Image 1 (cartoon, rainbow, N blue to C red):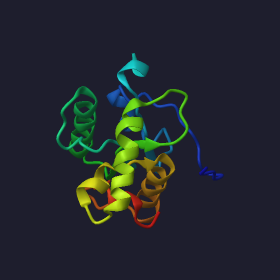
Image 2: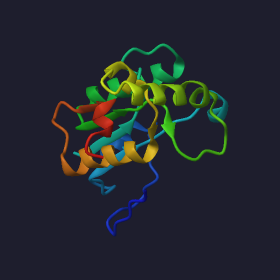
Image 3: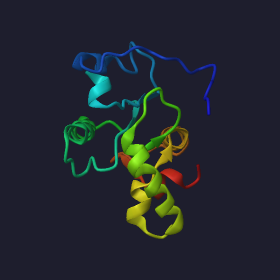
Image 4: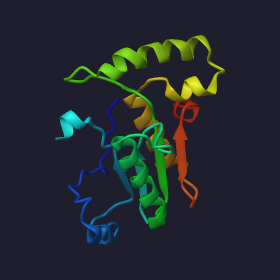
Length: 161
């Protein structure tokens, strides 16, 4: 899935520079800010903010989840309207093999299809990255999040996509 629009423009932004956020909407034209960072430790070495976090960020148990949890908390503290997506394993083309997806993602996907009414399984089922992007864009652009923000995971990422 590819989104193109004449008013869509990529802007390089220094997320580590707190004063840069003040420029959003003023010096940097911005109606929507999307951040979809995701990696592994091996690879890594009023605008609406839409982010891709991770299932489990509400109860972080490792560095990746703690980082995403802190990012989510920071967004809420900043008071910006936000949509946070918490997908499980993201499906899509990759250059490297992801063992977690191979060993856990596919079996969880099969189980969630066999037992679709089991909410816990759906939460951890793999999902195409395109579907997460579509849900993020829909809730940021078409439906606009409530002032308190919106968290999408499990079935909320798949409904209406």
